[in-house]
Length: 202
Image (cartoon, rainbow, N blue to C red):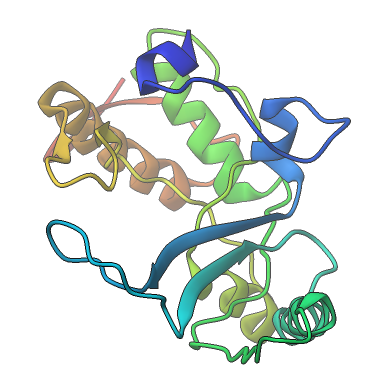
């Protein structure tokens, strides 16, 4: 169903793991761009003297950006044929992986809010890949855990015509009012009905 919705003809990835396992908690290596030779309209009988590729790696627990870069670089240089020169360099922007413990005050507050906002349905927990370098910095430098509570999930994510679901946006406004109340009152305090813009005690 997912493949059909995305227009895919199949999946590729690390053997021995399902697509969800690869997406949730396995490291990745992707070629995100390629160039070389004549790329204009039409065709020319030229032999390219150079080709380039841009690679991105999604890191997981216990991996370090500098170490992974060094290993990828060494592998590509070793695999290069004798008639080719291979140059590998970092474009910057590397970030260590980040994982949030499930049982934190922020995550517990978020779970209570989501359960209320979605009519009593509790949230499901799973790992997913993203690139938010600040979260790892908060964890390593400040020693604090972060709760990600975003409501920007739209359609055609990162596509040219990406857009936000307005109904989800409205739910998000109310949810943010609720979570600020939850965090401010502390766990175990008396419940309250939260309305966007004001709090009404029961």
